[in-house]
Amino acid sequence: MTPRVLVASRISRSAVELLKSRGFEVVEVNEPPEEELAKLIKGFHAIIVRSKPRVTRRVIEAADVLRVIARAGVGLDNIDVEAAEKKGIKVVNAPESVTQAVAELAVGLMLAVARKIAFSDRKMRSGEWVKHEAVGFELKGKTLGIVGLGRIGRAVARICYYGFGMKIVYTDQRCDREAGREFNGECVDLETLLRRADIVSLHVPLTPETKHMINEDRLRLMKKTAILINTSRGAVVDTNALIKALREGWIAGAGLDVYEEEPLPKDSPLLELENVVLTPHIGASSVEAQEQAGLEVAQKIIELLK
Ligand code: NAD
Image 1 (cartoon, rainbow, N blue to C red):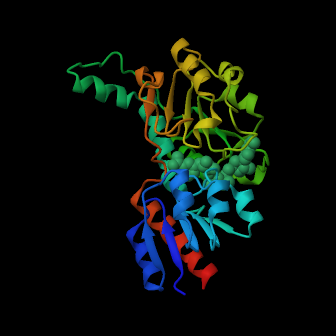
Image 2 (cartoon, helix red, strand yellow):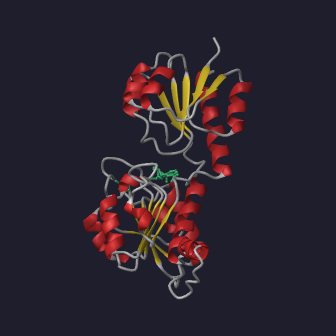
Image 3 (cartoon, rainbow, N blue to C red):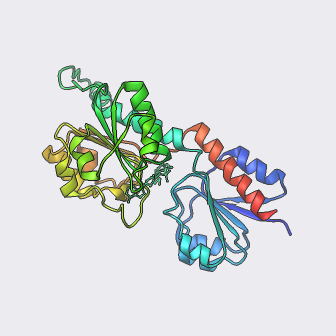
């Protein structure tokens, strides 16, 4: 029987071609909602997703011959891993493939907020020359606080230490002092990090422990001049508290790639704030990362189903 793969979010052409060249039948759909996916999933041996669609318990229970759920990227929070494992379905991802892309976006957001790049661009397009309002600050010599020193957190720390001469403090549930040595990083608790950092960059996965980890009390610990960068998951930050912090000046600005609700609702107050730079969850959206993520999960599927 021909093995069948449901590609449920857009992945690289070379990954699709690789699967086809190995005799797989590939069906491509565009991020179907839960109900539709629960119907579609029947007859497929593998499914490939990105941060969408959600592969819920309902979808997994509806599957009849499914053996692999592949996430072309890192975070598994859109997949009910427990339900999959209970049914003996393997869940695989491509953790290394998107590290550099996300790290570079985090640094891009830092620069965009610190130097008011997006703000200046907006004003110029509306005919204003905002030379005085657009005075920013340099990254050199500032303290970067990395929350979650995993693959992406380390990549950001490296760029900022070697590229900008920033000081690095970090917090992680494991607090591995060896991991921070290459950039002279100091492991501290979250509260100390928030008090000391000029830029706080979030790189933890979304788990019950990290949900709303950055809440009102913790935002109040940050310096008034500090900026918050979130390229991890929207729900790591309490959005309402962040909006309050940005409006009332508890912090100076934020650069966000991820949101509690995606797409970001059209009436979100974030859209009205000048001190925020917003991108539509494009951390992993580089040509190189997508190519690599697609190929990596296609290869894993071929291995597992051969
Ligand atoms: P990783 O697993 O290498 O690193 C995560 C780190 O967070 C680990 O060191 C872990 O010990 C730490 N951690 C986990 N729970 C913690 C807690 N409660 N307190 C403190 N530290 C904790 O993952 P990674 O590859 O660096 O990716 C990090 C996250 O980035 C992903 O989980 C994903 O949510 C997000 N991401 C976003 C995009 C995007 O498009 N914006 C793309 C890829 C990944």
